[in-house]
Each structure stands twice: as structure tokens, then as C-alpha cells.
Length: 373
Image (cartoon, rainbow, N blue to C red; front, side):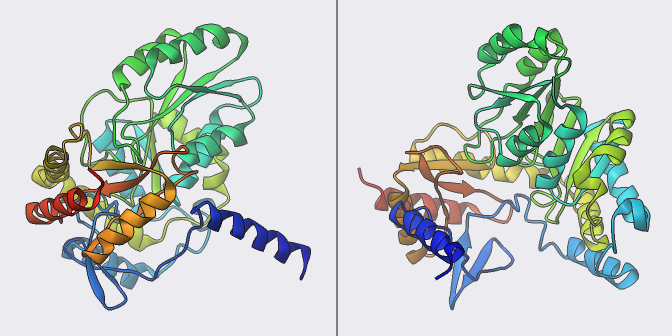
């Protein structure tokens, strides 16, 4: 056995022992928030398709028409093969939706966060990251080479303390946070964060991946990124900002410059989904209403978004509860470290406009029956 093979097997054994090994399970998503695994149909509460638009006939048709007209792939970097008209269109619509001068589309939300921060700050600069920010925000911070500090989750006083102590020794400063936190479903106190940022001349980057279309309104950051793969039911990431910032990232964001452009079908699908989102506000209101119905039934704190964590604790216990729910016809995947802190394994329940009240009530009742009193 080679040293590489031995290393991999030893690591896998450790992951198995801690109930932290991940496995891919063949699964087919279907309409009406359904999923198929093997011969079973399950009601899925594990999908980020918050508005149910990935299967909307209008969105599917837009993607099909784009494939027929433009082919399946982009062919290369946008700076090499040219700026496709559909990408120009989706960027203009995203900027208008966010109220910014411009937008830039990336290959994914992960790629966006890997590219934005290092293009704006580096050695000699300061980054302050919310303790529960997504892994890709941390990735961008680490790549940048800037001094990176953690502030306590949603703790504006701690953020202010760190800025007061460290800001003067650095040329530039950035604050990284999420509008809706992906694993906890709570919202950042963005107005207060922006106030502290202005007082210390810090630039705020907000990840809106889980808020777009569901948690709208409120203060906007100078750097608003998000994805096309959740509420818009397609694939890709974006940044909405000033024209000057977008122009700079077009030249300096490595995850934009050195990667293939988004396929035309993904851009067309997102463009159609964004149009639907804007003319059907009731679609965006439904996931939050269902999430609040769920939290009320379980006696949990009122949901702030379409994401509700059902805390379990130990990774093995979370896996067991997920398996028991699957046996009852529900797909609710267990979330374990390192995605969440040790001792906070949970079920992450995601609500969609494709769900109905009866499905939500049935899931809540199943959890009540399965969880220890």
C-alpha cells in the first residue's frame, strides 16, 4: 500500500469514528419539493431552492432556449471569448434589483467570495470576519494575506472593539458577514454593522446567498454578493457594487479572470427567475411564513429566514435523527462539524415556496415524535 493510500485510509477511519465522514447519495430532485432516492419519494427540506423556481416551466424554458441558441458552454474566460449578451443582461438586472451601479457574475458564490476580498485588500490590511461566516468568506480572507480577526457572531460591540484596537495600524479594512447565516438562519444586525464600519472607514462585504428573494429590504452594504443557485434556481455567483469596484474586479479578481464564464443556460434561467421574483412577491413571502409555522409548532424561536436549525448536539445523534425522518418520508440532512462548531450538529431545515402547510406540519410532528422529551 502506498503512503498516499495509507494516509487516505487512516483519515477516513478517523472520520468514520467521529461520525464525520461524508458520502454522496444518488438523489434526483423533482417538482413540488420532492426528491427520489432509490425507489422512494421523499419530501425534501434540504434544498436551497427557496422559491421553487428551479423546476418552474418558465425558467426551464429559458434555459432550454439558451442552449438551443448559444450551446451548452461558455468556451472560456469572459475576457477571452467575449462578454455574452445574457451575462450583460443578468448583471444589469441584478444591479437594478440591488440598487447599485453595476454587477459582476462569477462561476459560483464560492468563487465570488474567493475573488472579491483578495482583489480589494492584502498584506498590511485588516479583515474582520463574523465567527459564523461561510467557509468561502474565510477562504477569500486567508488568500488575501491581510491580517484576519474574528468578531463574535452578530456582536457589534465586539466588532467595534476590534476596529478601535487594530484599525489605525492598517491601510484598509474590510468586514465580512452574511445577511442570513446559512446554518443558523438568523440575520446580521446590518444597520449597526454599517454604522461601525463607516466610523472606522471599513468596507463591508455582505453575503446575501440565503436572503435574496426571501429577506429583502433593509440597509445595503457597499459590497453585496450572492448566488444565482438558491432563490433563483440556477447556478453562479455575483457581486453588486459601484461601477469602479466592478471594473477593478473585472481585472483583478483571479476567480473571475482565470475561469470559464457562466454557461448561457445558467444566465438565462437566472434572468427569468429574477423577473418572476420581482413580479410575484407572494412567492418570496411563503418560505418565511412556513418557517415560522414550523418554529411555532416546535416551540422554537421565531424563524428569521427560510432556514431553521433543529439543534441536536452530537454528530451521531444528528445522523440518527436524519435517518429516522427519512424512514418517515422526509429528506432533512444532518449538518456536522466542521461545517458547524463541535457539539452543535443539527438538522438544517430549509423551507421553499414549493412546500405546503401540510408537509410542514407533518415534518414538525415527526420531529416531535422522534426527539427525546
